Image (tube, rainbow over all chains, first blue to last red; front, top):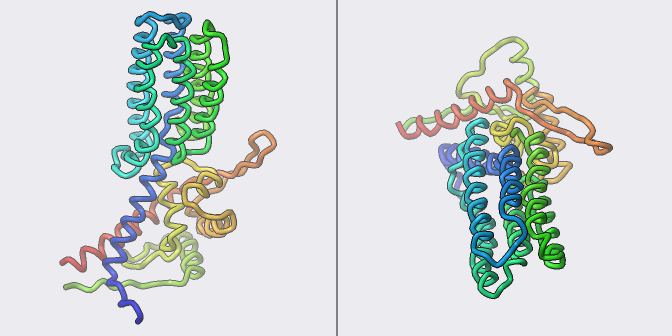
Length: 196
Length: 125
């Protein structure tokens, strides 16, 4: 049996929904802030200088927890500023939920593994663990973003994997190379190509 | 319940008339449907470019989950109507095609949105 024709206003509503969805996906697609990434990189290098090589003290872990809080704050402000410049709302529920669903689980895994590593005397291997899991979060969250974002995630993962085999004393420099160098390098690339 | 009257044009005629009417400085009736951006992929291209200063061919292809050929055809139609502009350059040795929305394209999207809202309002009133 042939389907009954849809009323014209249903088509109009569908079209408006399609436009809103396309705009939301497109704004989320380029929402990763390049300039914010550069600032996050600079703060990570400063944290590496302050923390020094990984040791079994709580101070070392706290320095990097502080750096993580600073980086999250920079990222949120930079994303909000970039969204405001492009005229697109960032708070749209669907893309934000989709991104969180992909980005957050590896970070939760990192939060669970951190005390386990600390309690079993493996603080020296935390840089590798963090780089690997942050890279996983960026690669999976970046699946809904411009191609350069998942590539950055893969670079973090490769560095994290290599860090497991590097001397423990290099830990803070590997953190500086990853959270500093990769954020700055890819941040400049994103800022140049995707409007800030 | 009010009735919404929609004048429709073929895509080719719409494309031609979009350029010609702009050249003549004519204004489209609010209820005249712009067939050129009514097509889903072209509407997707215009909507994506409305919230991004510029997007590359590959970004648009990935975002709209379409093929090279399909995107090329529809992007060319929008370009011919001067709704989008295309900039070609080289990134090292790799060719790079970037699209951006023109003022005419933004106006066309705004008119299209107003048109859809007018239809919904006419039915509700």
